[in-house]
Image 1 (cartoon, rainbow, N blue to C red):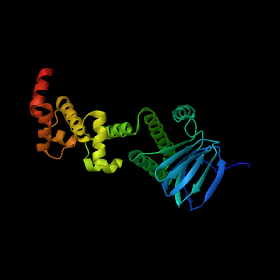
Image 2 (tube, rainbow, N blue to C red; image 1 turned 120 degrees about the horizontal axis):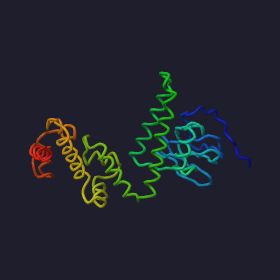
Image 3 (cartoon, one colour; image 1 turned 120 degrees about the vertical axis):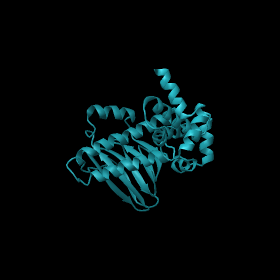
Length: 273
C-alpha cells in the first residue's frame, strides 16, 4: 500500500488543534515538516515508525520529517499540533537541538511539572498567533526553542537517573528555584501528583533529609548571603527568602546557624573589616 504524504502549508511555526472522535483512524502517513503533538484530553493509540504507544492526556510526541505515523482514537481525542519547518530554527540551532533530540521521532510521558510547563508554552504560542502586534511573528520560534529544550533535558534525565531519582532531583530543583514561595508538603504533593509520604521517602533516600528540611536550609543559606552582602533590614530579608513571620525566621535561623541573624551579620562583617 502506498503511503500518503501530507502537504499541510506550514509557515515557520504554526499551532493548531485536531479533534479525533472515538473510533477515528488516521492511517499511516508522513510529511516534510516537524510536528510536536500534545494530547489535551482523551485516549488513543499512536503508531510511530512501526512502534505503538498509548496517547492520552499530557503525552507528547515529536515527529521528524518523513517519519511514518498514524493515530487511532479510543475516546474523543483532542490534540494540539505544533508544526514547524526545518528552517524555523536556523541551521546551527537546528543541528544542535536535533542532536539533543537524537534526530528521530520520539514519544514522551511527561511528569506533572513538565506537562504544566509545556501547556504554558503552548498557551503563549496560541496567544502570539492572534497577531496583536507586529512582534508576534518573532515570538513563536522563541517559545519553540524553549519547548525543545524541555524535551531534550527530559531525555537526558531519563537516561541518567531512575524514576525515583528523577523525581527527587526535580523536587530539589523545584525548591531551589521557588524557595521564596509558600511551599508545604501538601502543595508539593499536589504539584508532583504523589503522596506526601512517598515524596518524603524518595527525597530522604536520595538526599538524607526531607524536602521541607532542605527548603529551610536553602532559605537560611540565602538569608546568610543577604546578611553578608547587603545592608537590607532583617524583616526585608525574612520576606525575600519566603518566611511569613519574623519569629519563624529567627527560630529557624538559630536552629540551623546557632545564633541570631543580627549576631551572624555582626560577626561576619567584623571579620571582613
